[in-house]
Picture 1 (cartoon, rainbow over the protein chains, first blue to last red):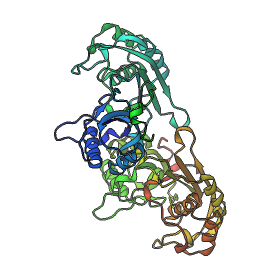
Picture 2 (tube, rainbow over the protein chains, first blue to last red; picture 1 turned 60 degrees about the vertical axis):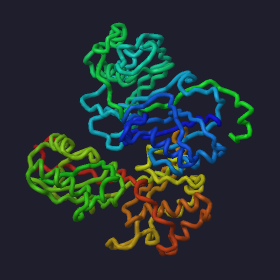
Picture 3 (cartoon, chains in turn cyan, brown; picture 1 turned 180 degrees about the horizontal axis):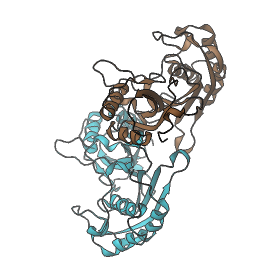
Picture 4 (cartoon, helix red, strand yellow; picture 1 turned 135 degrees about the vertical axis):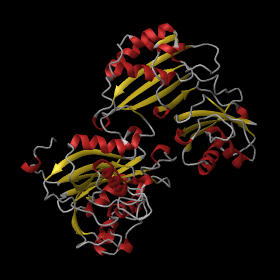
Length: 263
Length: 263
């Protein structure tokens, strides 16, 4: 048996999220069926985090154990040949058996895209929140976001219902920018943290948009954070603007046992 | 009666092209039904050129005549409210009755996008030709394209079946570039001409790709042009990479008769 780490991109539009559910098409079920076709054994996959219906991934990380001796290159080609076009395997790596895709994650980067122009952008309908009721002030949103950076109890920005030990997380960086030139109608928010609570990015976006449209002062998101009361925060922004961009792990040396497998 | 010029963007994926056809969803039929809902009269629309099934538009130009006295702003808002999400009206203008959307077009700009990376890009499947069988040499394609710029008989690059007086066209510019940074897997071709024959852009792309993948020398596209024989050219590249970007018209002064209509 060996432990494999997959890096996946997927378009979340047509999936009911990552996690297997009865009678819904999910990324996890599709991936496990594909691995079974290639290795003849249905694996149990584990992702760095679940993504909800409609949420996309540019670099989701998934692990599973297998007895297959296919090289990582052959495994990647076979997976990409069998997977539907909306899922792509970007990388396959052999990992030590001690690797744990959730516990070992050091930090995650999410991106949220808002389209904010006068007329809808038909090519980004599936990949951005279309906010066309007036112009958002991205600079005000950036200033308001500064109070969320650092180690805080983020329970104001958590949708209840997901089990977790603590609601304290450390946000390392939170950048909000309006594009330039041909991208001037797009506002991109990037947030990097050691972990995220359920719906945390989408609730932060919904809250900062209240500042961007002038309905709340720049001091408000900090007050919402302090209150530790979800009812004080803004709406949960819709899923199609959200991308899991990257999950960072410690650099590890390959154990000798899998050293014969080319990487 | 007045003459209206619409500038449209549309995602061609779900349409059987621009032109009305029995029992197929087309952009023209959808637009005419929408205008009828707003003005109570079904118009006859005319486009600067037909686009095929799967081909997109960033700036298609369409004209129609109407007795409606709605201002251009109100007409644009109403059209965008009723049209499906995959069509957007970017601009509405009043034109002199002498305006002819095909005859008056001075030049057109098309863009063709090729994805050329090692693993499929799931977010551009509908908007690029995925060419993943090896790396294309965009610089060689650019050099080979130089023989196509200028006034030539382009019958080698025309799919027969479309009526036209002459197969002579003037290509003003033909630029091929590989993107940089995060766009390095995308090759973009932009071609500007006084007009295009049926499938001309897609056949030029299919021909230049033969040079890019090293199957033909850089001198070959020029020889194909000289031969005036469609069978000599490369394949017709698939529709989803093609975008009608812009149609240029002479600047005209509004006639007094429609001067009361706000613009």
